[in-house]
Length: 119
Length: 106
Image (cartoon, rainbow over all chains, first blue to last red; front, side, top):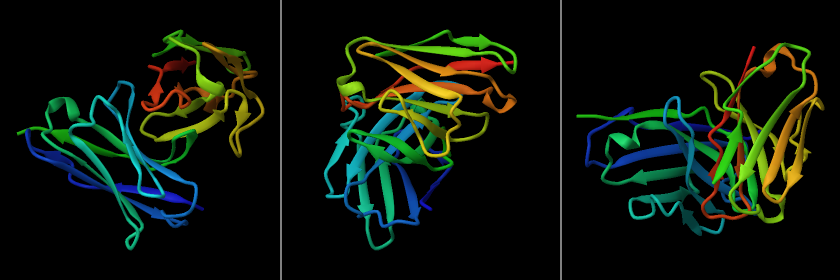
């Protein structure tokens, strides 16, 4: 049974870098054919796809965030990472990792981690 | 852009719910999914590829549609079905996009 668990600081200062990890259990993150994504949700608002990484290492990002975001995979730790630079209050959200992307739905989600951007 | 309607749907257990999702352009190859989110919880995949139920999803949930108009139908509402529902397209990506959600309330 595949499970995802996000972790990271709950508070980030404006202009700094947000860094989150997503620990994957039950399957190797480098398993053939799988995409792994980050998605965020402003509390009480809608969902925004941030980007995904394919098991080959190729990554694709939302154009609205592309200049500030990077997704990487650590196969030794079996986790997915997200970095978002130059954060502002508008980056305050619940951040989810999920399995899916490309032409695949998001079939497994983590519980999400709340990140607040504030001084 | 995906536009869901209505924003809020008020129904009673046992009734039929019909949720709409309209796309601003045709969704490639019907790559349209529906998700359920309960308060304080993560999302659960219900339907993918317009009409295919995800593993473990009860058959009272069904999806239909094509092109720019898609529908999620819940045939007979159970108390646990009251939640927020999102549609998502993943055929015209990147970017992957979501609708703004429909709140289904008792």
